[in-house]
Length: 76
Image 1 (cartoon, rainbow, N blue to C red):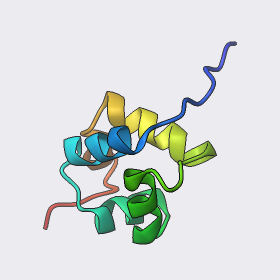
Image 2: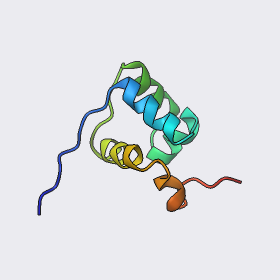
Image 3: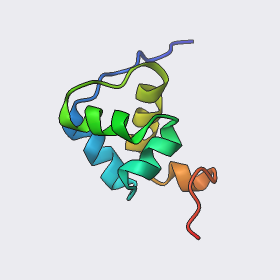
């Protein structure tokens, strides 16, 4: 078994992933289990996501509808 290493994401990439999933910073933060301030810091390049957040970002990047598929985000 080979597990791909997590990749790093730039602020622009984080924002692009969030926008591709059609989420606000607040909702995106809730989905990832971080604060809105954390998402803001990632997007402006003050900080970078790590570990589990990078894995989730990779999954959302590959399949933006992933969140709705597993009921993480529900349109009400």
